[in-house]
Image 1 (cartoon, rainbow, N blue to C red):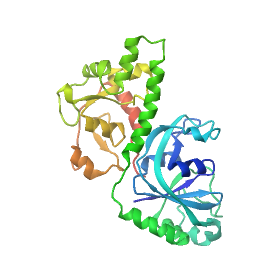
Image 2: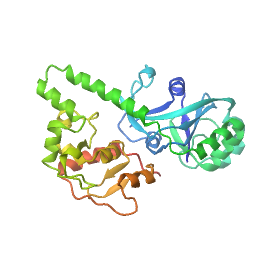
Image 3: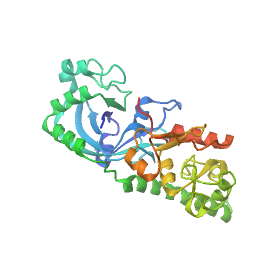
Image 4: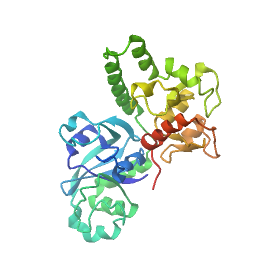
Length: 325
């Protein structure tokens, strides 16, 4: 269990009412932003302190891993320069009766502020450039003590909870997004009907895309299953992120069983160019072991083509649930 601090001045109402956090993936100039990258480290059961207008006004329990999602329509004109696709995390927020103003307690808080990625200045003021950052345990304990019973009860409940991720929620979000893309493809009269059908079927790892992947791949990279009936052609660069050429490019795919396809698509595992399988540190290790990914030994699935390596690089950069710092 970890603790997080989110500055929500611009999007507080939308995120609290909607029960989520949302950030772009990169800065406007395309550079990585550590306060967006932290979204990839959040895991179910973590606790989030919501800071707005100089006060901690709400606390939330994280209810999902991070997943790709378009910028919420309810943001309106907020963040006009933000990229349209970002990271989303489901959070169950409760508004606090005791809304603590950190600046009033900075003499105590200053002693436990982290030296790197701090959520507060030494004066107690917030830092505008921070969206999401980790709260070290000593700082979390002081904040919980200042807030009082509301925070203590929620913290205890989160600590005792097991993994209860409402997967239908984020899967539902992704389904809606992908169905919207399908509708755009279906209405694109510049495409032949056969092209439209191939692009839509490719979303499920079948059809022409699977045929092209099978010219490169011959079995599931992890389980060794070779019967095509039991395999999906899994996009390295997700179908939802790809252009039409990439959606049907055989080198943008691996043959995987449905279980491995889920782990790969959701960013719980990645493949290095050398063939090493790397498990995301936010993954639930007992579940992965039961699903057939042995986490107590080195797994190497063999080499990839030059084209596959390019698409796998996108997966590592933009899909994988990130390593902890």
